[in-house]
Image (cartoon, rainbow, N blue to C red; front, side, top):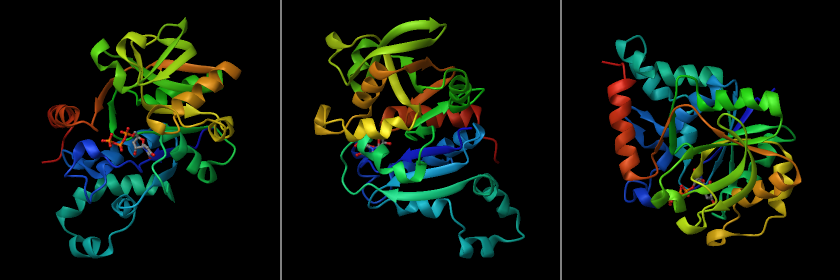
Length: 274
Ligand code: UTP
């Protein structure tokens, strides 16, 4: 029922300079796999096989990653080295990949709006691939199940300490069952004293398509960017937005410390190739 997933990957990744000067942040490898591939694998695992990227200048390596590399493949054909391509070949076989560009960095809301022509008029997933999620059942899978039950936009949230809250969009809401809240307030990057709760939005969303028109009518907010959080608050007030405390772990790979933690965790727990 939900078949599409949008990956906004137009950001500059300034926290990772100089590594991200000419290379997209989403191509940083956690052990031997680029961040964006983890996100795409999670989407495919949730049954979202039509993958749309909202890219920007300097992001062509992402498109190349999901395409055939003839020279390389020809060179290693028939050798044991081909095994190293197994995971990306699997991803390429299962998914379809489309691209559009965000010309100016006008915020996450604007990036999503740019993806409208890739999505059309249907509910869709959103993955911010710098948030690497590790869970027994993929976080998007968990959210798709909820969507089938509730049929409204869903944001993934986690509890964060007060001193970190101003890095996130923060929700407040009525708990409707264990770990699930009906959102009645949302603030982007609040000061700790203004945060409506300790529940921070992380980079996984299911959005209903009415969000596009709402974003069109959402003026720039915090940092003069069109904030998805502001559009979601409008959606919550007009209808329903749920916040879901997902099961699993999340690493903020947009920050150096989070990236190092993710690398250690993946190497110790998930990496299998010799
Ligand atoms: P971030 O706030 O992490 O920004 O964006 P960033 O530019 O990627 O990284 P820093 O803060 O400069 O280090 C959150 C997500 O939204 C996307 C980014 O690619 C990232 O996945 N984004 C943000 C866009 O696609 N377009 C925008 O205009 C803003």
